[in-house]
Amino acid sequence: MDARLHTLEIIYQAHQQEISSLPLACKKGCATCCTRNVTLTTLEARRLFDWIDQHAPQLMEKVKEEAQSPRQIPTYTMNGLTDLCMAQQEVPEEPSDPGWGACPLLSDQGICQAYEARPFACRSMVSKNSCQKDGFAEMEEVTLTVNNVLMQYIEHTDDKGLTGNLTDLLLLMEDPDSRKAHEEESLSPPSSHFVANRPAQLLMVPPPHRDHVGALMQKIQSQKGA
Ligand code: SF4
Image (cartoon, rainbow, N blue to C red; front, side):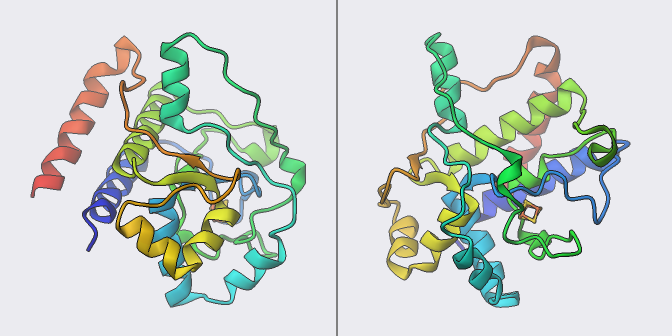
């Protein structure tokens, strides 16, 4: 197994443990956050595509059908955002509208059809209150910090890969040449729909959350070495 996929599994498990004791309103069938604007890394897209290919290959038809629909196209990555903030530079605007429609992997009943392999952007969308009822999500600040740090860590793990929209990356990972290039860490952005990932220069952790995040990172490191 690609060591980067192994690290990704450990990060997903560590995040699941983090949120498992939180009083969350999220439940099956609530899909307010399942829009067509989900972005992720190539590493996660490889894992997601493999799962779809093995368990529900028909889902790729829906992804292809919606390939011309409007969706959020990232112009910077999570670590790119951190670099911009460190340099006190302006963050470019990135058009995104939930009204553009639902994620192509969502069923008509509001169920994720690739739940086991969903990317971190979906895993991190947790809320104490019902988004369906209130129209917005709410989470503890430390949960937000953990989400940001783990997102940075995933990109760092895939620092020779790309960030893109779920639709674009699934179509890219369907191409054997692109998959091979990702495995060999030689994948270049094939179009303006993708942004090159970067290593994390600095983790975005406010002082009150440093102990919590430090313990979490130690746990992940020890599991990686186990
Ligand atoms: S991958 Fe699944 S959880 Fe994520 S937005 Fe799509 S339907 Fe929702």
